[in-house]
Length: 427
Image (cartoon, rainbow, N blue to C red; front, side, top):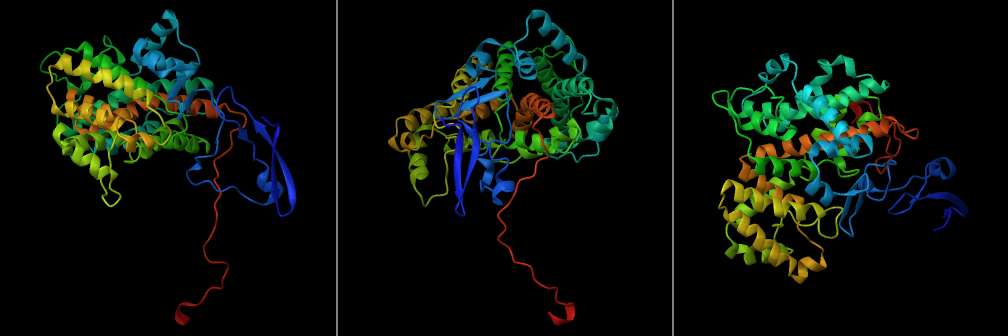
């Protein structure tokens, strides 16, 4: 590794420092590029640009590695709980038993939402998409919790972080209940974070709700696998909104809005719809042939990833989880047989191997969520619920970063040059 990168422009040479992280590619520090050269870099999508320093999540897409604070995602999903992972992302280390008990108690005591929010929900149409409701309600939280919007107060930042993590399952469940016309259920402090969410979503006041341990474990794993994923579109949106000094509730609402896009949070719904379109394993060769045909717009959803050029490490855990859920619920769904056969054929096909189109986490998660009973309109809501932990951790890290500045991307302008105004009558 060199100490500096050299750039030649207009006959002049410039040196820029090369920075190294604890692991991963080096980065060239070009903060002084414009001041020294009068030029910008051009990087649509910022795919070659490090926008910040972070200690939270590391991804090696070529090797299929995903680490949270150094811990492999597979180990966390198999051995820990979502609350442990939330504590890890927020605080940097896994909690001991006492710390976890205190954290669980804190989150549990924040799960209720202001009673007036029920009235706010009723302002939406009954057929409103749950993501539209989630985005609106989370953005409105700053109108109900004024005592935790001062971003310069570490205590208020902590309270806001806990509130967002705790209230998101309640708001998500309320969005679902509202869409199906059922009464809201208050949280039950005797249940776990995930068990409480399942009860508020599928329970009714007329009878007690029994939490299925296999389903609870599966949902907890899904939450872990979606908790954070480095500087993706929605996380970058949260950071960009936060860089202006916006309150944390507004920042998370911005992340939810970005996540709603089908290219980001809607991929598992698209994968499930594709499996339904295929129908049975016998029809898979037909659809694989269509996927290879450049003149056919059909795409195999749930395969390949913007970052991973190897097997998505989260997909391995998901495949095992599908079996556990189907066994527990006695589900005999041809979609799962189709999914397994499609994976098998794709992984042995030279076309998919050459293009590194491996199954990703969305390939299986839609099947699991459908088996549990969630409609497809709730899939992205569940993604947002889990990702709130990562968004909050990233937001906290950004606020305390001494290098943090308000986001201001540059552009390559290719519109008209300066021209004179022509009066209306002369045009």
